Length: 265
Image (spheres, rainbow, N blue to C red):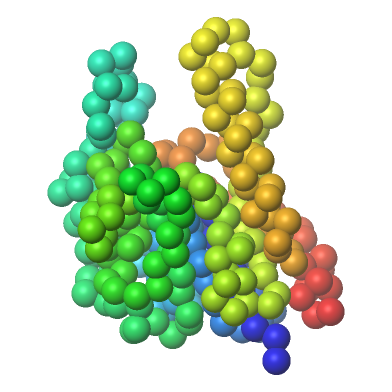
């Protein structure tokens, strides 16, 4: 019997678009057997694995953001106002500043409490490789996977210092297959076309974006169905989470028949 997998990409507030995908799949009565996630995708993946209900995921994630929105906005200001000195710091936000958000979402729940098989991707900055976490406390794994390098402080897990899973595993399709999925749906994000760099700083970002796109496309080549969201929003603009969800719902609805044909094959 075929096992269905769902791979959710990194993307900050854009992760709310993944919930629109969950909504569609539930309406189409497609059972998900495996779910994997990187960064914001790991938040949605873990919540869905725990509850198995898109409305519950929306409620938990949105309420968490609303409660901690002032803190998110403060962090966003750090990003917008980052100066030359800030790039020499290891991080702009300490673990103790963002831990309460993840604690609210997952408490003391473990992978063993999940209804759906779950894999969370993190990046080991010592060994320079992606790691797939499938056991332990959810709060630790998801917080680590969401720790954007240079913005959030790295997290220690089992003696390893790890950061955002999106560093080398933007959309964890191969990880879903590794966990036993045969048919995999990938929910990811379209990158805006990068303009040609006019100085050395822009060149650095231009090359980094190019590398990220190469990695993403390689990951997506292993998926059976790719749902790509076109959202012109910065990852840290969490005040726009409702707009992200509503935009994704409308866009996905336009592709409903196409998606249904593919998953019914």
